[in-house]
Image (tube, rainbow, N blue to C red; front, top):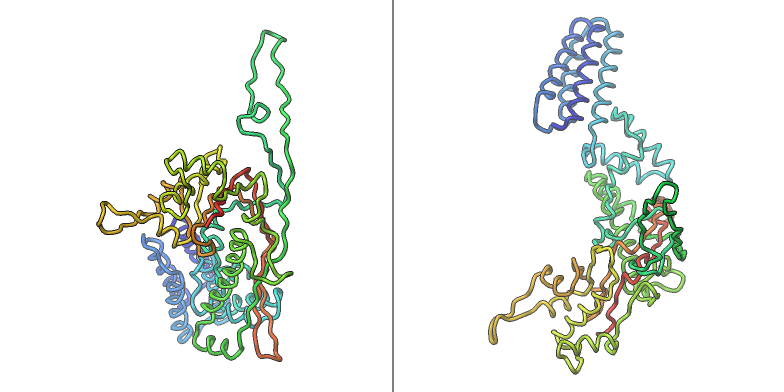
Length: 435
């Protein structure tokens, strides 16, 4: 059992022992039974569900209340104090995904039936009060009922650098430039110590524009009633909240990689800088006739560039990967579609032998990147190498609302985030544009 949980149980036992002095007769016997149950839990080294212990205590309480006949008011007060203490202990032990199924469903139902954010907080608060749960705020319980992990929605988006500000500065000076590197101070004799030089960085400001990106969905009341009756309303709320967020993140990543050309004008995402834009000095775009690429292929013996050839295609991707400016040795990723990965990973041990495929790790080493991401957003043969940490994202606020449209007997769900992103690191992206 975790140390924090054991300490909470120890404190609860101490409080109950002090409270026993106010009880008499069978009430005192009940308190002794409760203390005994908690002591058993405290001595255990295994993880226990606090709800199970509370259920046993509640059974003891009902058995006692069926037979008690003395000191009614005093005993009632003592039992209420006992329940409050146990409820507080239960709340202290609540972790994500550890709300009982009954409470989670009641919380989800309250969220779905409420009209607006304030109404949701009030409705969830009523659920907590009814179930005797203290020590938790409504917002925390909503987070427990709807557990969303944005970092799990898209592996590439997870690696972008999340920053709390929308304006940053960068310098185009090379890391080895005399104006950019640090100096060492030299001690002289007595009062003739060398004075430190003023080092001025030539910086340029860049702004991350943010705006709300949203996704809306409707569900019929009848379907909600069926799910509530089946006791699966909490799972549905988790599903739809994650699904809406998934769509938002997927659309953002689509725009970053290939630009949002799907949405109609006015609906498209514009607050994230796309890697399609050849924004010097952040993106290096390489075409088939790129002078440096042609020279590189020639140095490898390919005097007639032909990027439909598998070996030359791999060489071109390696050339693009090496164009990423990475003076600090950051994590570099390569992005391509599954078909291209299959094509460049295929090999034979000998003529006439079976075709084998190199692992992602082997292909990543060939291409000069640390990790490979595959996405069907890119066309066959397209390749992007980038430093994810060099792409900065600002998420100012997330809003989640549910509201009814009674004329249509539907519940509307809306998820939106106020966000934007831009490339920070110089030449941290190289894009091979040839097919």
